[in-house]
Length: 74
Image (tube, rainbow, N blue to C red; front, side):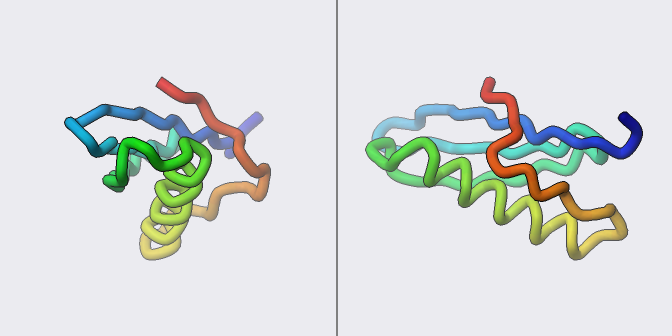
């Protein structure tokens, strides 16, 4: 469907921390957050998603659809 978006998540372990990237499939906008390696994966995804939503709100891009955890983890 036109205008439908997905969010891709990438997790990279950096010692005792993990870097999570969230990438919008339509605009290519990418944000990153860093958290403790022991943190729950869902919490880190949610944090990265909120940061991506905020970044998209600052730009002219339409907001992400409210579909919950619709994404693809790399």
